[in-house]
Image 1: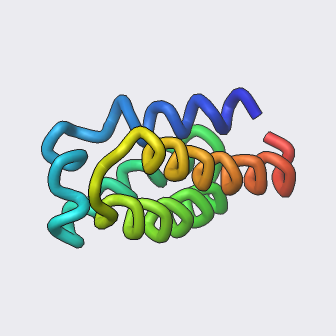
Image 2 (image 1 turned 135 degrees about the vertical axis):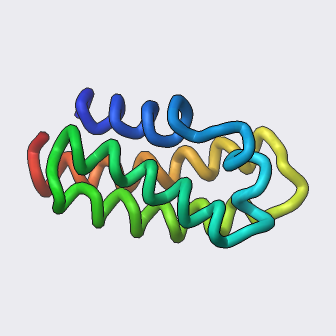
Length: 96
């Protein structure tokens, strides 16, 4: 689970540019770039199958939460909890 959590932290925080963070809710290409970047971390660390799980789940979750207003601390917690559910699924299915 530690490896999956590290991938999430890198992909969703370290490698998400300020531009991506501010514009992924306004521009679907920026959202797509962010999700590809996020998934790429999983690909290089865990493998191809992890890219698809990470990319698709992130596209759905961020596609909803990045377009939800107002931006509150509660929304951030909901967003991260939704990501955690998918991270646990990846971890349990593939035992990484």
